[in-house]
Length: 409
Image (cartoon, rainbow, N blue to C red; front, side, top):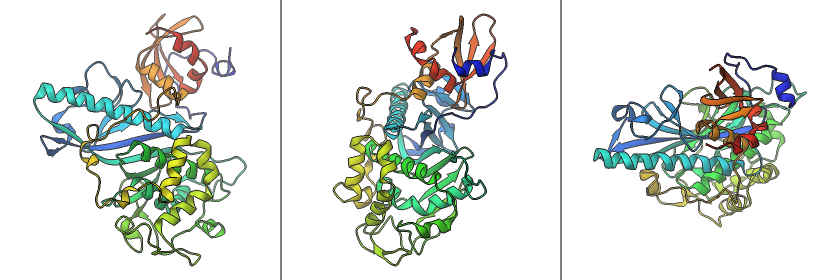
């Protein structure tokens, strides 16, 4: 019996209390506008919930949120269709795994809408709106908590992240980069990026920088003056428009960074230099290069360097926002950039996929059938012997993953 099993003791027939993930993790979400017959439409006005256009049985999550076979979830949120990945533990290749999971779910949703179009005789388009990059929050031990709250961290990141993120993820019509504290995670918000490769690069930069700054002894803003980071002189973020947090809007800068020449040395830093946005992004990435390299796959590591050194284009170099934004899933889709042979699935991802598939788990002489999820960290089972409800954390289930994967459907 594993140490985790001994610690948990006998399974209770009642839901377990929420548990924090034992491993550092990340996840992605993307929001899409819906056009039906070329008219902007609230998804709630056409579909009661995602089951109205997705065929087959779906595992309910919460509200109008349902898990899809890829391991992600789809739901409606104030007029948009939102697609989310499962949690994925942070290790080398994690950003690529997360982006692959997101785009596989986007492809699944797009294929189900294609079928709905044939049945309904109507046309539905997904337009790219926003992307949210989530990184779990944890402090290193022995450091004072007062100056290292997640709220202070979000504000500090809003001075560091915007320039490298906008170089990789934004377009000419973008308006800002946000950082929001979400209890147990940091969430970075920016426009949806209709390029899987650039989205992996964005996720890699964000996770690398956020994880590195989490280890700093203080999250006070004055620590910026003790680094060699090129911090903009005429810049101050504003309160985020949704929930708590901070937003680096175009109006927070001395000029609109989304509309300027990214190679022109227009931007004055606190140490008196005048640099281009590309140079600022490159120097920022170089400061955190070790952390970025640690979690990056080789292809993405080269792509980040190419964009930041001008060898590969940024979307901000195009005259306007690319047309791929207007029909996600058709004009742009997942092209198996990272196959499972090149990059295996994460353990958390594999656990959640098996739960969504309803794969029975044989454990300690008991037969357990998955019936639902509680958030992203726990799986709800029905015990065959007495129909008792058993709630197990995915960290516990990771230990039994080899056995679970051998079980036939």
